[in-house]
Length: 193
Image 1 (cartoon, rainbow, N blue to C red):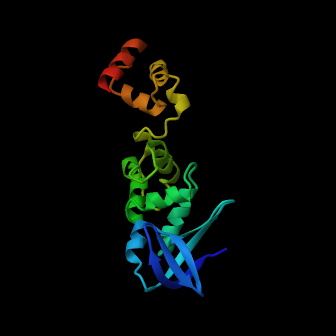
Image 2 (cartoon, helix red, strand yellow):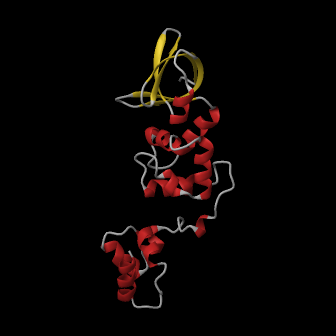
Image 3 (cartoon, helix red, strand yellow):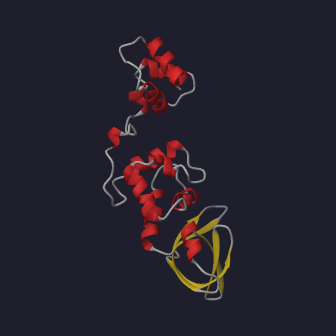
């Protein structure tokens, strides 16, 4: 396992750098921030995360150990692979990403390439208490309501049959009077959408 590499930056491309160490050029995937910091023909010391699959052997590199640890936290979220985790870290600096996760800012996280609302919500729910910042109370954001709880409401079920996700259906019904009939609640939710 490769834990760190020290060498000379010999090439830079879109989201990769080549670090020559011991006569070997390692192609490393890096965050946007690290890519901007690394300079051609300058020495660098990088923390490495190896991702080995049947068809590829990718090396992800980070200038700071803290960034690598946040990357590994993101990987612990169901549905987040290494390239998506790197994409999330490339939206801003690690402090901004930590802050977005802790505050429940899914909109910030969905700016990352390939990250949809569902994955962003999962990242917030799974990591808000693990990023080292004081997190937001998720019960106030509605992110903790499970699909099973939401779909027990007949109006939510009706909206889901029309293609809504359970959380979106619940959000659409928030401002509708729950005392109304199911049919009227659905009509009002659709009008408001």
